[in-house]
Length: 368
Image (tube, rainbow, N blue to C red; front, side, top):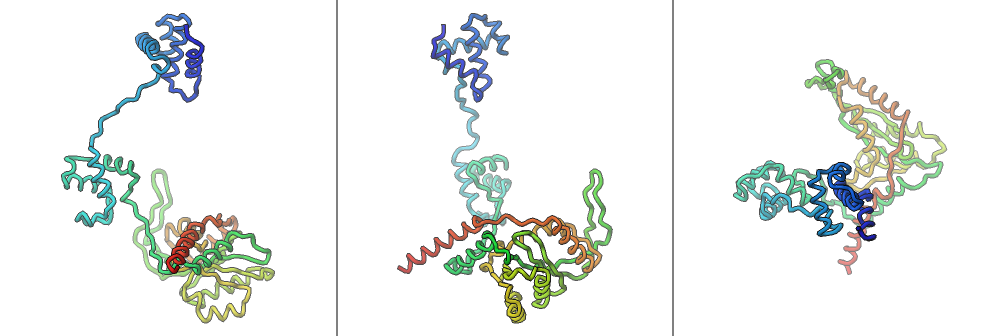
């Protein structure tokens, strides 16, 4: 006879959704045996062999409910000693040149070869190297670009970032718009020497490798950060004159009721030249806002340029500069027919501002 506590534990184990299927079957087998079922009939009902029913019944009699649980298993013995992992991790955290290797960065194959060359192991596969590095969260075959700050992350820098954060995230008045402006330069027609072939079953689009050079165009673009609408012009040169052509287009296309046109654009000399400054004097509703140096990612139009590159300029094959300009015009029209803004918030700038505040606090402490 089973006691009330043991019976309750077996029933709970059998019904628990997270219990392993094998453990639930063993609990059911013990309950059937306690109800007077024979070992053979119990085995048939729970899907076990009579021998296994006898084994688990015996373990239950010896250890109770805990005897029905799976015991920890030792698993396979490690193939490589901890010293191998230590040597590998140390090597992966150093540049290959320090090991006398002419490599820009490590990969698993090269690390395996170096371990063998150093006599650390007789043999090791690239897959084993990857498993060890994965355990230590190392990926030495990856790299990221970063820029040492040429402009101090001081109060002036933080003020410029906060200004952009405010322009992108606050609710605008009806008489305000915020535009992100930049240029995508040196767009070449690259006329192919053979026709581009469309895709077919088991065949991708096929593009002739050789092409003719026929000059280049520059795309001047303004992106409305609230609606996603794009304004653009193209030019064969990149000067203040061509940039002012874009500004004149904005002056014509933006409703006169909008009295504040905030333009976010980078720190090019072309954007700060005498002709541009003179134009701004005569058009006071336009206000320029410059992100800090080397912070072009804060200009939303760069995000739109990425879409343009993928969807229109992924395959470049145009008859001449005129056709390239026409196709760019068509792409912008299609975009504007279903334009959407990008989701930017103050969180996009919080990390940068936190670093600024840390540097400002350190400067104050050093001055004190």
